[in-house]
Image (cartoon, rainbow, N blue to C red; front, top):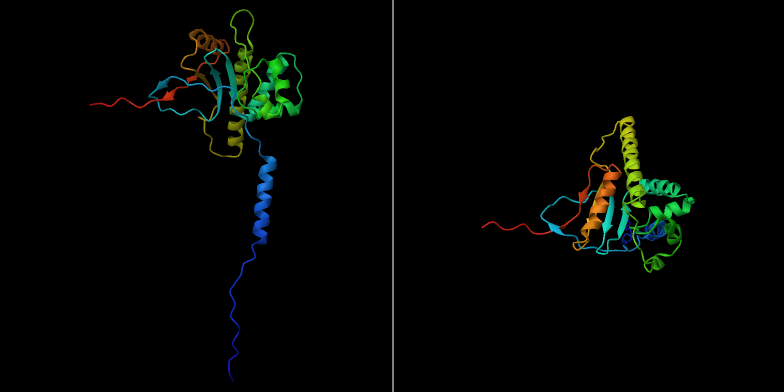
Length: 223
């Protein structure tokens, strides 16, 4: 009895489910992603041959050549709590949406009273705001920059202890070096008194260690 030959056909793969999944992922990231606003100031720090990298978690104070101070904190959760504490210290009430906007913002150089109104602006409108810097006058009462540094120190310690306790409870390894550190990034032509006053603010807030951020230059060749 002769064998029945089956017609040959090329195998095909239905790509429709994969295309649908790709569009779902794109839609998800578009709806959940928040774009970081452009930095209000860019400084050119002095250079050095030190190759130490900027910490992943850092409270950064940037000082431009006009002596203006800008603050930024890379840990959003701690940044939110510090913002609430500074607002409460100044008698300013903020809602949860404003706190969330601040946590997702970049460096800011404004008085605390001007920040809530600033956060209401769209990203393209924020770039038009003339930021005069966070006040750090060391004469008389404690400055606003002092309270930013002070509450960041307290919340950084609380965050470290909470993560350490959680790792211990879940019996997971814990990186003790992953601690929010303090740093100053000053323009190479920044005024000496401005840098000196910011460092004094750290001392007043009992910040015992901080880094000076510099640009990297090539090491001198030895002949």
